[in-house]
Image (cartoon, rainbow, N blue to C red; front, side, top):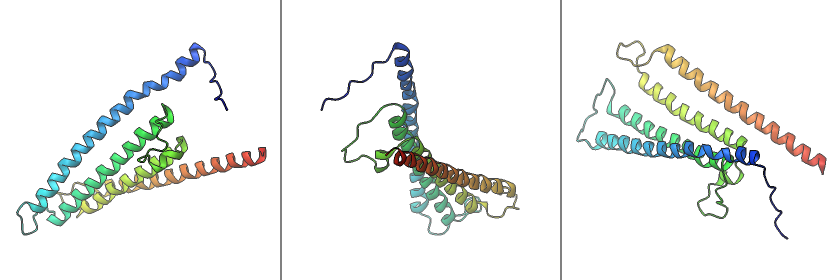
Length: 197
């Protein structure tokens, strides 16, 4: 069976359709940002190694925090970098595949599982979940660092922690709303298909 001949586009349609390639520098810029995060991860990892194997046999106090708390905060920082890096990969690969051009990864052993059924709706839900994960790490770091809110050396105020918690809850509600809307749209589309059949 021969492949159908693609429709010829007029010059205006060709220009409009080709404009999607203007997004290419944006994705290349995100790849540079990914490299910067790899560098940042290396810096934080060296800091962690120095903290653990720096020759201190007793808990070190740094700004009123014990060595255990400092190590925990560094590890959370590393997790934060990894989660942001994962978010960048989803935006770069999923966004390019969805809005610019096919990557033709079918059959490739390293093709991400989620990329086989990616579309704008799936990408929105996955990005929302990734942002919630990043926000959770930041909130956990805040709760660990907060210590005595009333102390003059505290970097956080009670109001600041409250607002950070509210923003996190808003992220969660937004993600639930996006997922719910996507589910309704998918159900409506499948209902239309069954009706036509």
